[in-house]
Image (cartoon, rainbow, N blue to C red; front, side, top):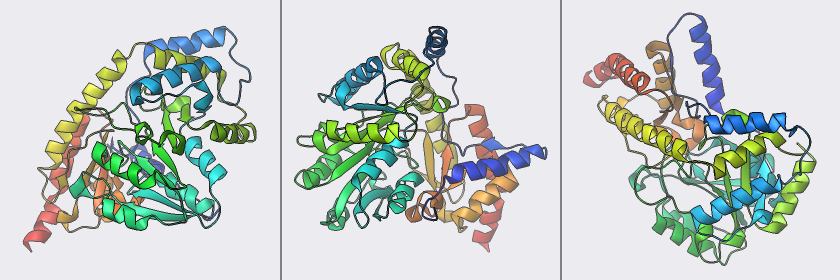
Length: 388
């Protein structure tokens, strides 16, 4: 248990809530979940399912109708031929991190993963006795890998590579050319790729983020992680899915049987309505995130000592704060207690996140602009230090 980590966002949220209980005003930019309600047609589908009696056990792999809808969506959006036999429906996205790792990794195996990155990657690697091999995400490359360094870090012990695009915490999108180069390095190796595509529908302009599964020879080597939480504002519904080779689906199903048995049946009926129903709700949400992204990045870049690259996807602004001269952890605490802006210091996401702060712009435009103004007001501290 000592090898298991946690998500710092929830720790910061607790501290922010404690300040609010004391009467303080806090703007929440720490938690990574859409601030939109679940679309009404999805909620109605869940209510209907409850009335129809979808309140009992279902198949561990997921109900067939939902798996068919997911397979059709993934085939269409990624340009790959997959069927319902390749789909595992699970309670949230995290089981598609944990279960495939549990099925595939032995102590001493190496896993290459993005750093800064979602903390659960490294947590699960360490828990299973494998060796985490961090790949720095470079701001100068749009928070993508240095491909030469990636090649150097591949070894005979590399059993898994984790990709995340669009990415948490940076919002970076891995360019198609980089994905192609990575596929070329992995195609002939005995290695699986965990492609975390949970933000696949939240991107801004240009072509959709590329899945490595769409490149020749990679479909049988790839586990696609996606779900409903981010795209349809369904974080509390706890429903994700993985698309993977059939032999690995069997392993994940065994782990489902031995852990949660199945994903809730009525939420799966709502999932059919989400993925097969109208998508205008998604387009509207992404358009609003786009507007907020532009506004907060522009605002952050006007704060002395801040430099914020414009992200290509997700809903995070990952600001470089080295220019303030204040360590990012100390600065994040200062912003919470002195400015009433709750955010996450980049070191929460790995050693290469130090010097950055993540702001989730899953909040109203008015609150985002108020947060920027609050930060500007307290910036006199590091401005004075710079002058001195």
